[in-house]
Length: 113
Image (cartoon, rainbow, N blue to C red; front, side, top):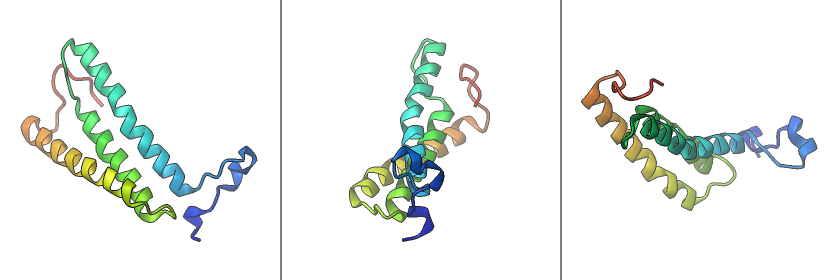
């Protein structure tokens, strides 16, 4: 078993097996889920439905992190791979369209970063 799948010694006292790959996967899952809070905040601020660019960045990063967890960790789960491969492609495509449409600047009614 590689070092990325071994439990982190400084967390052993918790009784929870957290490896570097699990931290990557959990961070990706939190980022992918947290993008909805970003979208909610931007929509509430604008007073109309808005999808900020940060939503797409978080989608790409979160899905690629969870995809890498399912691809390279000891887990290697085909369901997890399929579940994260398609959102990664869709988010990359949507981010590309957003940048092509608006350029690199955020929209005037969108919070920066």
